[in-house]
Image (cartoon, rainbow, N blue to C red):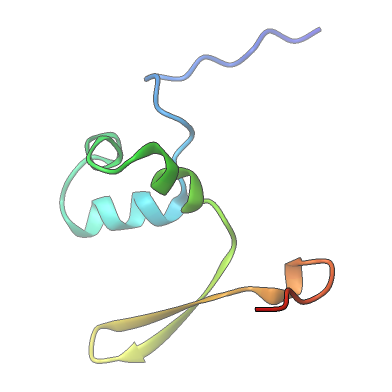
Length: 73
């Protein structure tokens, strides 16, 4: 049985979205994660499609391809 890996902090594992945003804002990912509610940092780990709209704008869209059937709204 393998021992559990220890994290450097008590924060949950950080998403790549949070790490990229922290780099863009010139802050540490841990510092940025502490400024958001834990539920927000958890939801950042969900898969998302990212589209560059030009002019420094990015559009994000939920990836329906990962679900078992399309959800009705």
